[in-house]
Image (cartoon, rainbow, N blue to C red; front, side, top):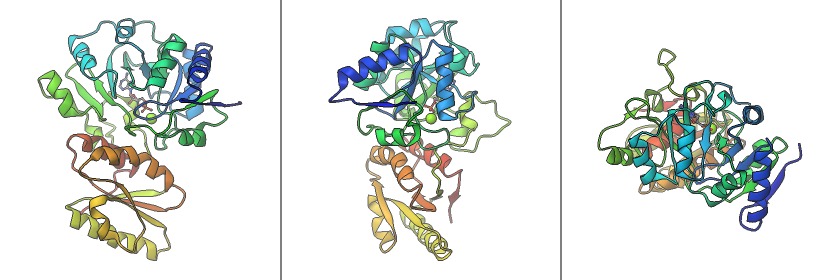
Length: 347
Ligand code: AMP
Ligand code: MG
């Protein structure tokens, strides 16, 4: 397949108009959002949605998110709109929060992977919104990566995974947030299935009550647990290199990383350390990248997937420091733990 690429700034009109036509006629368009790049198809056309799964090599039981351009579009996608959803949408939409509730009959099974709920989000990205409006339908989209790999946060990442497999790529530069949206299940007690930049603390402030966090956010998926989101059971975000996390205070984590780095290097392995700005002095003489600062977890989130992709070919082992799991740290650690296959070393 011939892939066309448009620049979201210099070819905004053409990109969104042609992209919208492609979506409407059953094709695939990769587009920027504030979280990561999405791989979109007409969310009301089961055959079009199927092509997303083929392009990604995605297991058919892992559902997609419907992207809408205005809040009122929710009404036709769900059986009803609960009051809590309205309040959360008013506070956080457009933005990085996906809400999951009972699906209406217009949604094809391919979108929900057969579940009786459907996930919906309104992105804050101007190009994404224009593309959805131009297409005239809700756009079903997962992240635009080959299944199992770190999500794409630049158009180059999308090109690396999807060239020749999609009709259009719209290049909107690097994504602001860099991690996928928070996924919140609203049937029953609100439960965070995937943490993101709209944090547990922010959601609880709007709900006026505590919300649950799915066990598999920080622990390996347990087959005895019923999966609210089947996607939770798959290996995710994994670069080709092994990822090893060191846990403890800054000094302890750095000692573990230095010891393991030297051990792997002596065995002929190429190592890289993803260091916080605060810890770099610990790694002098070894190969490290500064991934961000502990004072602003959003920098670490923004860089994580790009770093994992960058070093998938020039390193055999990637070391990273564990971060506290409050606020944005929960989303960061969720992705890092999954990328590492839950490989955590501590004293
Ligand atoms: P991606 O953004 O690539 O991870 O794909 C969309 C994600 O949304 C999936 O991994 C699921 O975890 C989540 N999701 C989509 N639909 C549902 C649903 N009906 N129930 C629970 N989670 C969902
Ligand atoms: Mg994904």
